[in-house]
Amino acid sequence: MPNKIKLVLVSCCAPCSSGAIKQLADGGVPGIDDFVVLFYNPNIFPNDEYIKRMNEQIRYCEELGVKYAVGEWDHDAWKKAVAGLETEPERGKRCDACFAYRFAYARDFALQHGYNAVASVLGVSKHKDQSQVDTAAKRTLGNIEYIPIMWDENLRQSINRASNFYRQNYCGCEFSFRKKPEPVILGIKSCETETGTL
Ligand code: SF4
Image 1 (cartoon, rainbow, N blue to C red):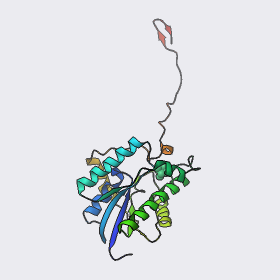
Image 2: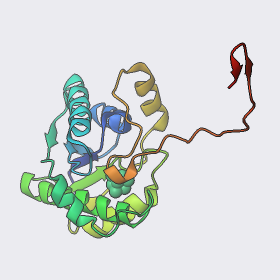
Image 3: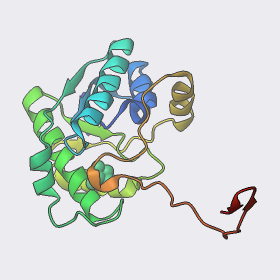
Image 4: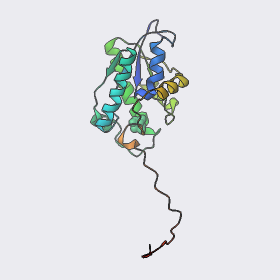
């Protein structure tokens, strides 16, 4: 572990990162000397959804007065990185490649800007598998330290309850859209009316 930890916090959206950013801003994670929130999410589709999530992230960081950086939305390049894995389920191999793609950017960002550690909130959602995120990070970050911080979930939930964050209902990519459940037809009854039977 480096003596002075300068941390890049990889974030996917405001609702997942709210508690983590507050903890870091309040000095609630011992040993972190400096941090920046990195919003790099070329996985998010379509672009207007990406803009909504990005704007919420920026608004929250500015509210707390913390540093942030936004990477480019290179969705076509991201799609190439997950090519062949489109039909994988959420938490499957496509997500391995997606996490690795974003951690690779975080690694390069850290090296270029003088940071020496990375943490993330990519495993915070109940739909995610934290161990999958940790494995992708460790495999990808090379000489940059990965710090698997367990964030305060109660704090995150209480901030989110009190906030008016935009909240999405799918992970991010076009392959993760959640289908609305089909209506279940339990039975058909004829209905007598004044003009006949419907
Ligand atoms: S479901 Fe989420 S983590 Fe998985 S590939 Fe899509 S955007 Fe990435």
